[in-house]
Amino acid sequence: MNPLSNEQKSAFHPAGWLKPLLLTAVLALTRQAAAETAGHAHPHAIEEPPAKTIDHSQMDHGSMDHGSMDHGSGDSAREGRDPDAYSNGYRLDSGPYLLEGRQHSHMADSHRFSVLRIDRLERVDGRDHTGTAYDAQAWWGGSYDRLWLKAEGEHSSGTLQEARSELLWSHAVAPFWDRQLGLRHDSGAGPERQWLALGLHGLAPYWFELDVAAYLGSGGRSALRLGSEYELLLTQRAILQPRVEFNLYGQDDPARGLGSGLAEGVLGLRLRYEFSRQLAPYLGVEWSGKFGQSADLAHSADDATSEWRWVGGVRFWF
Image (cartoon, rainbow, N blue to C red; front, side, top):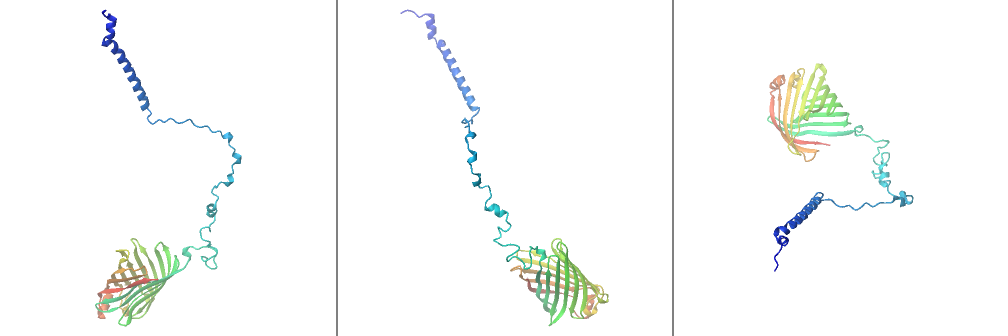
């Protein structure tokens, strides 16, 4: 066998064929990495199909019937322009909603309303006497001008002990406030008295109902009455109502048991339950007393100057 030459020996040596193989592998890996890098640069890229070209010159716009299209000219559009379309045929110039002889609509403040309210119709049970007390108000008119009738008194031992009646014209001077002007008549025990009345009635801040009235009578007599009430809602139907009232007089009136200055005062607390807005029974307690010269006149007549009494009654209006 002939010996191998040096070139043949080098061809079978590992270094002779390993280098080209490694170079080929490196080039292949480099090309694959470059391809993967290019693919990750736009992972969500999606090839869009080429846009279709529309030839508008081939369309016949003159043959389209635009009149058959609904551009909002249907029934809803016509009804939107008709003020009577949604009233079921009722109109302001005819039909059941027209006041006879009227050809135009009216605001609520142009109408006249009437209310009768019995604030207190109660049985009074005190240490010295029992009786029945009442406090009623009625008015007729509109939002700005009203005619008021007020009546308050107490009946005991078969006779009318005291009563106050007022006929007033009321005019709104501010939101929640009315000015009142009229006449007052006192009756019951003692001689009757007539007064000219000027007052202010309304809701004070925090919803206190306030009634202030000044009176002028014959013979230089004068008087001032202050009254206030508040309604505390315990529930939607149970209402606690404190009440206070004071009467002052400018001069003595012994025939009616009244002295000058602060003469009388009443403090009361009533709890009512409204079965409805129009009907509410109640129970309560009340203190009444006389002060100053009025208390002296009561002592002289052997009458009590103050007393606590239980009250129970009903409040209603219509």
